[in-house]
Amino acid sequence: MKFASPSDANHGAPVMRFVSTRGGVPPATFVDALLTGAPLDGGSFVPHAIPKVAIKPLRELAFEPLATELLSLFIVDADDGFDRECVREVVREALQSHAHADIAPVVRVRGKSTHVCELFHGATLSAEDASMQITMRLIERALVKRGRRANVVCSTTGEAGGALASASSGLKTMDAWIVYPGDEGGVSEAQEREMTCHVEDNVHPVKVSACPDGMSDIDAVVGAFMRDEEFRMEHGLVCVNSCNVARVLSYIPVFFYAYSRVVSKEEYGREVVFSVPSSAFGYEFAGHI
Image (tube, rainbow, N blue to C red; front, side, top):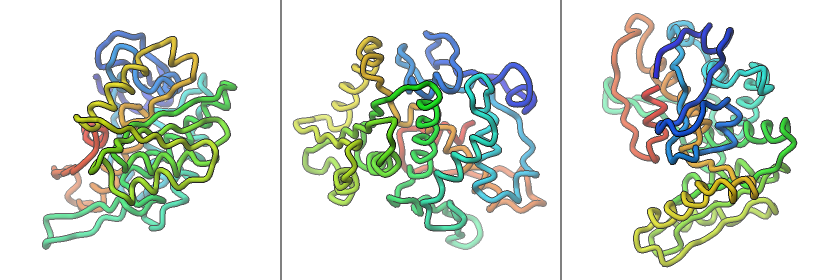
């Protein structure tokens, strides 16, 4: 990756493109990367450049406008029909279901050195809620613009599955397929209920049993048919696990927001340590960006 100024990444040519970590597919527009999910070479789509931003002007922004500013650097593309206002609408709609006005409030624990960013204020109390809500609304708009319908697929041990069920529920452009392990201990009862208690016709939870290696067995099967280009195109499959670039990008505002709430204006630039206790490296990669 290279670093680019905001003018390179957003306000002028060339616009952001996304490349595979394995280099086996051509660079993609945001919408192409979004609707592909994972590239056929088995890698993951990543931005071809990392925009440089001035942190201090972002400090006073609430979570919603902050997310709009940061996501616009990667998503805005006139050729794809995604402008800044579209991104703003997506973010606003996606965060409506959050119960806390700050979306991701930061609270101090153990004196002055340790803080916790609370990511459980979404519709399913999951750290994936904001990311999945944003991703589903981006996919919905992309499908409408291209006159397409999709089958979105997520393999999960519970948290992302409930978030997907909630975010996709009732959307007319897609069916959501949530694949999870059915063996004892695979998911909690509460997580299974979040995935299976939706009455909307477009949400399809799929319990898979006899998986001695748990999610590894399920991921192997899902990964195989996602790499089958003919099958994927025929059925309009879109992977929405954390390999989808929209999932990664929508995590980025969390790190900026948390940093600005922990470090004072006078201390800006001071290094902090983020500890991410879960996820399949999506949050970690967003933190790297």
